[in-house]
Length: 95
Image (cartoon, rainbow, N blue to C red; front, side, top):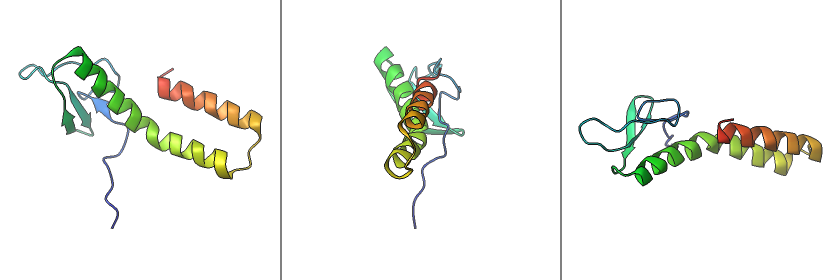
């Protein structure tokens, strides 16, 4: 039986963007996905940046795997691959 991770998209402190707030009591940053706390980090600006990075990486994972699969197996032309890569890059960067 395959164990599945919590579905994406993940959020930081329940927010769908990377503008996050610290917990009022603990002042810790949390990675939250679908109402569940996945992990708690510390209280520094670096911890906040790490939480946002974790979320971005997890949310991009499935799209990146799909893109790599397409590059390896689709036989798609170079122009289409570049177009797909640019679209994926914009999505991952939140643009």
